[in-house]
Length: 22
Image (cartoon, rainbow, N blue to C red; front, top):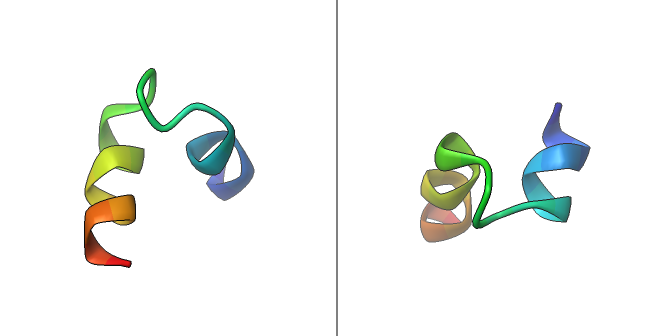
């Protein structure tokens, strides 16, 4: 799932939060 987060930061809502944290 983490891979998809980095792959689709805009599509995945939770991924955006992760990118903000990092």
